[in-house]
Image 1 (cartoon, chains in turn green, yellow):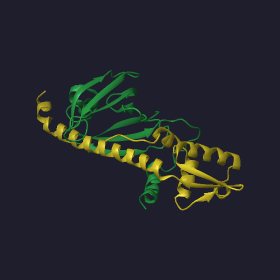
Image 2 (tube, rainbow over the protein chains, first blue to last red; image 1 turned 180 degrees about the horizontal axis):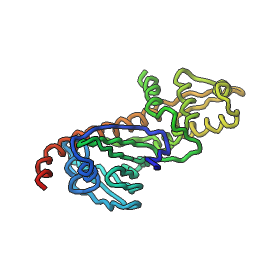
Image 3 (cartoon, each protein chain N blue to C red; image 1 turned 90 degrees about the vertical axis):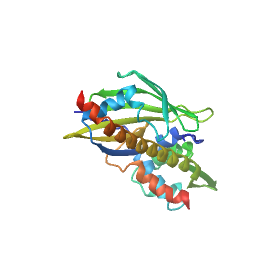
Length: 151
Length: 114
């Protein structure tokens, strides 16, 4: 059916296989108590997670860095199909006057026996006309840009 | 970790279009005039000019008008902000995945008992 409907070329696609059944991996993303155990870089803690896991429901995750600074990410669930797919908007709550960047995170959970592969894409919001799924993603563009930027 | 100063939404929207990505890629090889850019595409000059405006508004391009010629070049600051945003996200997810992996492994036994 209509798998992850990608509006834009993804900025970022990551894959990782976990040695756990799919339902457990899916729960790790949707149950606040479990999410607290692993979300964020090493050394970070999660003092607060609120999530209303329904389509259109909001979530808010407060991540505390080892230096005590809080980073907050918020968004809204766009698709929930346990245990195979999840997508939500992803907005870092910036300190003004920095702008917010509106992005979309989509995760597919693929079953391989007792293991589960995650395919995570992180992309910008659609806001413009044409799109072509066969185009190379932004990462390629950025790879060439980086050469320019770093010289 | 996530601070930036450029308007990244505008940058990401601008780069969401394949024609505009091609324009940007072409400009990584050197500055071009609007005419030179248009010559490389089969779409009309007005269409290209619209794309250039979007890129310019996003901060990715700078335009210099000399006589009747429009010269375009990439503006590194907007790109740097965008690349560093992407790198930050990539690091964020990779680090989280590592921790999730550990978490799933250490809780496996409890789970089996259930």
